[in-house]
Image (cartoon, rainbow, N blue to C red):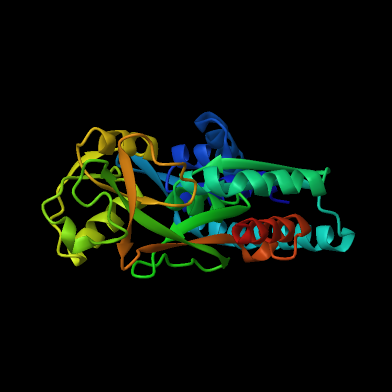
Length: 299
């Protein structure tokens, strides 16, 4: 009988494309992955991997076995979910991933609610960008991914993944306090032509959104400074080095030297929760999704 953990390892190599990627996804060393694959090759009696340049690729047999492994792991999760649903107990371990502002502004009350209601459940949070959390969700490393996208740039939901809207988050422009428009009740984006901008690094999902938003508003995309943390972006705004577009979720009061001004029309991003369809009936998953919806509707 084939070993399930070795099949899981092969499936991780298939989905990540490398031994290193599989090791990161499974939270083990690369040597541990190599050992599992070697043992699986001995069990099967055929080569599953072959060299390709500096890396490796699956053989035809490896591809076939990885495909079967994916279906098998899906069935295993369905069985585990059905058993948990039969017991009706909200227990075990639940890992939730969220992007930075949701991790700060939405998840703390969710985790507190889960701890108070379900003492037998160990809920953990990891902060990940949406593309990272979606990949880990598909690999089975996390149970729920809280992600963001925009109506004009929707994320594609992969096969086997379910999703539900959580909230819509409005974004405002942050201006230096002495900016001529800083005391306005609202401002149109095209009134900010000629501004320097503070944005996000190019590998973050918000970077592309900001550039597209500026372009569609007829504003020159002059992003001179980038930072992942909103506190850093706001420090640059306070120093008079540019304007920034900042979401309201997870945002504190405006720091000294900064004014938040609503934009017209108001840009909105969508926050949603994603999970594997095979875990839909898992009590812990349902409890967490319910707590997310409750937290999103609180004032």
